[in-house]
Image (tube, rainbow, N blue to C red; front, side, top):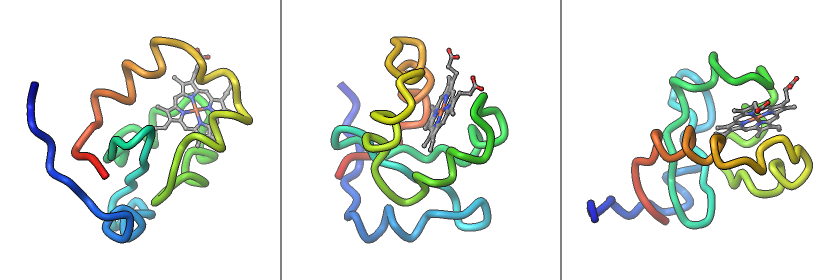
Length: 81
Ligand code: HEM
């Protein structure tokens, strides 16, 4: 199992724009999704979660409750909280 670096919430929150990088958290994982933003099928809405947790948004948009969505997310993991 690869060891991922630990980030603080403050570090995650400092990455909430395309310029500074777009990071999100999900179940304790930290993800740098900057390169995925332009590929997101739901467009710029993804930026609402920038610097924070995905779960409240994915609870609203149930389209994300699919294995293939989690597979995409896993490709962007950079650390843990
Ligand atoms: C659709 C991934 C964050 C809103 C999708 C789909 C994927 C995806 C793969 C297509 C699903 C399918 O049809 O099979 C992701 C990933 C995210 C993310 C990897 C975070 C890293 C968000 C956020 C929001 C959002 C934060 C809203 C605030 C939507 C909407 C759609 C969608 C509205 C439906 C688009 C349509 O079919 O017209 N997302 N999403 N997504 N996403 Fe996301």
